[in-house]
Length: 367
Image (cartoon, rainbow, N blue to C red; front, side, top):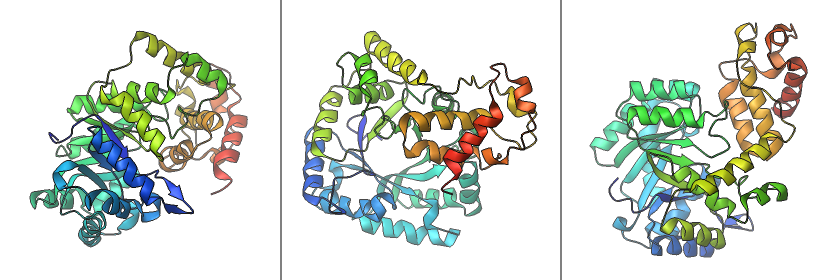
């Protein structure tokens, strides 16, 4: 970890594209600027950019710069292995695709309760630890999408995990569906450095509506979002998925001499958060009275939080949490039998049955 030069990383999931292919020239220019400005952390995964991310890093980074110039993170993604015997061959293909002999960091990708069960069954953590002993990866970590209690379980069962990558931004910080703050607190209790993904919530905190942007009083939305995440205690790295040279230029400019948000800037961010929260969203307080007596075991507040996020930001993130986190161990919105138990105990007197029908229409129509 001592080779990391600054707390800002190049997330290679969203890259410069031209005519359906990665724009190699633009990518080389972005890599060059990133390194010239003193940054050296690159993050990829086998499936990013339809499998092109690792290969473009070989073309634009690893074949052009000596190994000591950069820190490279890759991930073990569950969609590319079915059993333990598949993991080592996949890992070797990743090394070849990236053009390196080892990874600085190797993360168990997108861990949740369901995914973690598969990784345990396939002895994925044990295999990665063996690869570490062999010198093929330097540090073992996880990337995580689930509730804080699941993260605590993973870190308790595998204290060998050295770093944790979580979704953290000022909108998700206290969101009951994402639990950014609670996941961060788990990392702090376990003494694990934090890598931040989605500091700009998939670009939603950069491409702000005019009324929301005005609340920042002329400040850069990207700078506010990224510096908010980077300013949290224990954050080792904040990733940004930059897709053109101007984005690279702006982000590296304000992160070269990093400083956390000051009081006035935090107040501006809080104004943005309140404006979003006031946009006709479901006023659920997540007291969870409704879940105790639900015969279908529907995690109602979490589904409402996903629906709120979908209506405001219109991005993939809320769909992911609906389908792959909150309805994996609990019922879907469409499982509601309209018994009304939830509405009888709701302190906000919400029409929960109608709202669940809206959630089902939003998230289950394309399944």
